Image (cartoon, rainbow, N blue to C red; front, side):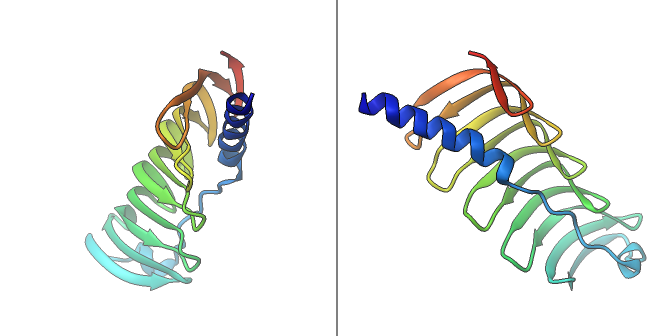
Length: 153
């Protein structure tokens, strides 16, 4: 009984936490559009950048926002895009693919306590095959998700 209750609580925690995590856009201004191609370190609107610029757009690098949120990976314009790792101040992180500032493609959401949801994302929501693991890496649940909801076990 205790194991079943723990499994339900862990699953609910992983499932609910994914929607609560927001991906920030990258601050830009007229000066960033005129940066020369290459790597640049600077601060802008409370965020610290160590990024590669190509053709006036961010391409890849590391960004730390004023609240301690961090991102390392691919960039496209004002969005995280491509493969990367996004870490929230709560200690939870997402490792995987992004598209236009949203989780999109294969990726894993790892909570601070070690619980993990791993699978496919579409437009920042769990969408497709996925698995839920407890903090020790044991599989709790697997199935198919649609718009953050488990639809097939």
